[in-house]
Length: 62
Image 1: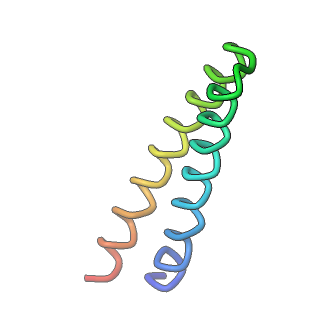
Image 2: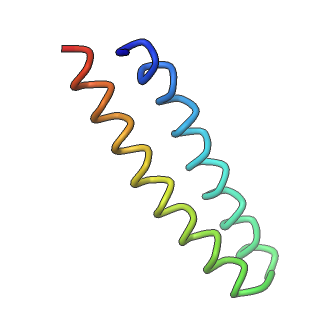
């Protein structure tokens, strides 16, 4: 089980980074404020999921 969460951590972090960069790109080019707000909400949700996955990886690795 520990290998599963250990391999899932980079994907979770990459998802957070992608959504963050998409939100920043949208804000910098003067895009829709609603779209930026939606992307930042997605980022917060993905960060929560990433933290849960990281904690599970730490728990199952010990």
